[in-house]
Image (cartoon, rainbow, N blue to C red; front, side, top):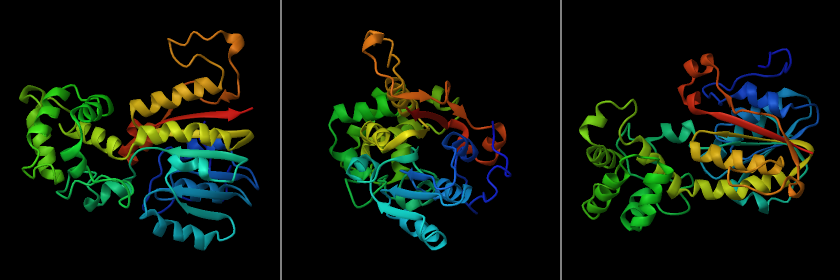
Length: 318
């Protein structure tokens, strides 16, 4: 069920920013007056603003590891000085946060539209730029250096597993052969190198750019996105009060698989087809609010194509 404006009379969209599955997120989190929420992926602040406007006295603590997000958070600090707090932190370190007993916690995974739209960040090959891809440019190494120094095993994991690229052998071989000639340093030459590794018969029938999958895998590896997800899910669940909701938006099958597995575990269900734990030994700590992932409506996909691959899952702690 989608929310009507009357249900949240203070609700307004953030100009210039389209937070994914916004109405559906508000529906599962169900903010009420005085509610306390944690937004682990602030991004453009659309979800945080909607929560703050949803009911009187709602407070939001927001995290983001991208330092560029701090300037966007300043607008909410000015508008809600007593109800909004910003923390410059990677959600993979959520366990370090002392606060707990939240009514709702949100994770909106993947790269933000702001990061994609800033060419100098190197997330996209639409514009030629240094191949960086770091969500926090103050930490780790840029993708260009990672590609020059990663082991073959690391490259295989990034391209085959994280990028789910069918032609991973050819792509990995091309990346290793290109080391030292400068073609790994910029998004344009890197995309061209990857595209050339894909057989011509497949390149001509692809709906997406031939380098899309490999770029995704490299980005996930450079930012340790799946490792951070494995760390944040139990930490976030532990910070919910009884009755609190953990909601996660994913854009990638590996992310969604990890979230589904964790949620099934806390709901006392088999975590996979190989999980043979007797039911008497399972502990149900949550109820599922989404039997199947919630997807964007056709209307939202038309307005915001990024929402096409979004999946929302949520559980309520008991």
